[in-house]
Image 1 (tube, rainbow, N blue to C red):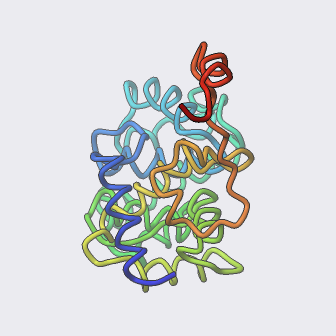
Image 2: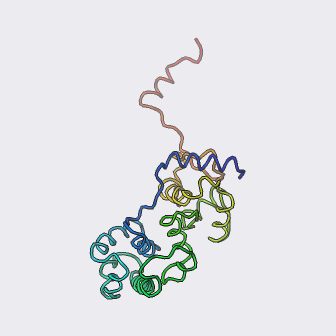
Image 3: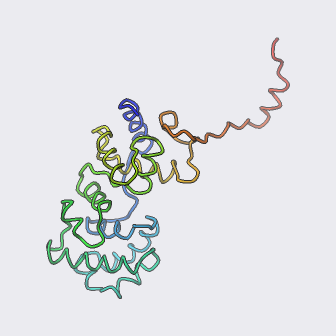
Length: 230
């Protein structure tokens, strides 16, 4: 895929998604961090339902740490892997208090040192909270990169590096959310909505599924009754 086509793709995505941002609900960087940790293998909708109740009771590292694992689990038990996530969240909060005075650090190294925080979570925080041009490659971005040929690779890190190398600089800040929202609602995993896609003619996916246009009511009859020539 050439640079001109990449530029056109992101111009169209930006026009289609004028306010690209996370669908996780949060009011502070700390709340975003906890929401992203909880979102692993879970939907943003499910996480939002849980965190609305949790953050109403505890929304600081000190307050959540004080809940303990047993006190936190009832708030997040509807989220997958909640036992492991509760342990990580409590350990993360304790480390934030002990090492960072309760503040969320703004470097990759410090973020990835927190329990429950890997490269993808760190990239989300760096991009969404701190405005850094990072790309968090989740299942949507991995699928889109390989399907459209925007960023091909055999693993997440290869795809991330290809995105960072080839995405036009003007779009680097918003690229993560543009792509994740496009993947979540249009370029879906099982049945991509190619007929509704704003970049369908630019995408290099070889197996596009574009439905044939349907005739308007009565149009078929009109066509049959219209002579081919006067």
